[in-house]
Amino acid sequence: MSGIKSVCVYCGSSNDVDPAYIELAKQLGTAIAKRGWRLVYGGGTVGLMYASAHAAHKAGGEVLGIIPKFLERIEGNYEDVPHIVVDTMHERKKLMFDESEAFVVLPGGIGTLEEAVETLSWAKLSLHAKPMAFLSEDDYWAPFFELLDHMIDGKFAPPSMRDLVVASKTPKEALDAMDERFVAID
Image (tube, rainbow, N blue to C red; front, side):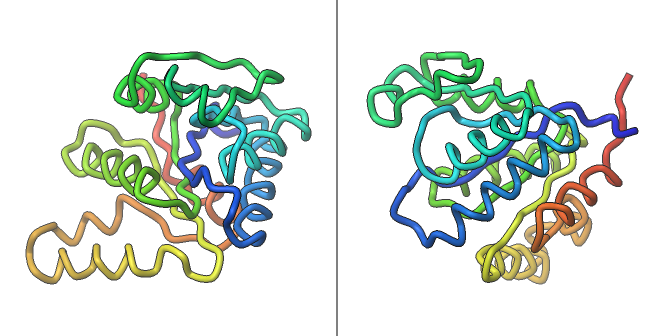
């Protein structure tokens, strides 16, 4: 049995993306629910965030949304699941981090990238050992991994940096990899 209880999903909030990305988010939400893991996400009723949360909820899974007050007006609030309203984006990220044992990064924009890079930076600094997987449709995250390899090649990051993240193509692959890498901390 897995020690993972909650997975934070970082992903885009745009409704205008390729439907394949929305479908990938739904598949991930369903897969998380089927494992009995809680899905923690940025709240709201838009984009891949809502697609993953709604799919997890529909599949009988537990979901926790965390949203800053100002985004409630922009993104709405998924009232069918528990949610926490915070004052700032910093509080949101901290609470999402604290409420999760692992992270999956779906396709997204600058906000998604910022959340993922901060979490990865904290892992590199040994501030946590929570597993992290990037889940791609159409190799969405390939340029990110090329950049990471470029940083390693330039000696701006150690080769061990690549061991902190997994590139995955399916929800099962992402969740299995995190499950294998999870280390319970007493």
